[in-house]
Image 1 (cartoon, rainbow, N blue to C red):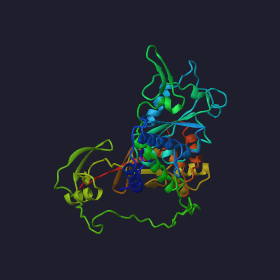
Image 2: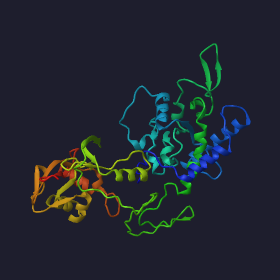
Image 3: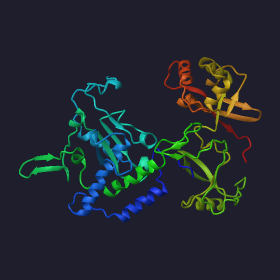
Image 4: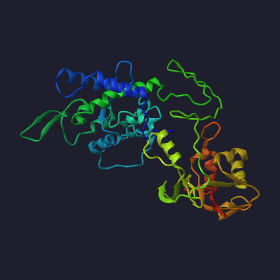
Length: 427
């Protein structure tokens, strides 16, 4: 099954999980706040996770900075890191939002907090180049395991760190406290002031295997189609650029077996259910197909269901068909210097109509092609995807700028029609 939610959570590799398991079995760990030898060894592993552990990437090295520049405060997740800044940062009484971003760190007194959780899941972030005062992140988004541990990176040499004051104290964050009066002295190290209680030391020590996995597979420096990169970290990529367009099947008991599906399912009753926020009528195709899906996916009670034939719900994005007018396309193409064919490719339509006046689709309600009747659901609101060249992958903003000018710079930019086909003779 394809997995596409890498911005939500990465998938750990099998080798990474095996190494984490071997680490937990081979090295006993204990509360790093204790004072015996096992606790001292665990404390050292936690500190190495902040900095560098032999040949493995660790937090500060991964983000291209040193312990003299940034401190690493381990948190439960990125949200916890942001909460820590929000609750501990001493804000000025008078604030303004009319400061240019480029001059925020040039003596204006602004402090920058970067929520990098989603960004670092798929991209490299060099804090040597971009130097925000605070950076929040979660490690499971980077390499999948462990969950339940994130970090707040704090830039040391800045006024912002002096404005980050703990509003309270808890276990392990103070070096001195007076019982008779409300007086306490926090620890000198920044991380010591904000890491309340016992850290998730098993998860933190497992980070070394996650960073090692990133390094093993080239970090985010992967190979792209038609690039000239044949070696990553001294290892050949072994990539061949061939338009094979072939899907492979794996982990199936009998990949050559056939599961027959009937064209009609009149013998089974339909049931209502919500799919992608749509209430649709469906029926099970065959019991054999459902059993095969359950076995192949390894998930409990999977069912292959067919949408009722006369249903107007397609379960596709917005509508089953996207229809555009070639005359309207020509006006946009002439404005940006593209051919009609290139412009059509940008909009990715299902149907292109010819011989009509430009922009007549703005008021159209229905369309007929021979005996087939199509009804307009809504006008298609265009986004920046039309700026992406489908052949090269490069982003060229001229098309959406031209469309915005045609629509008199409105926030919503409709172009083309979203339609569905009315079934005259439902099965």
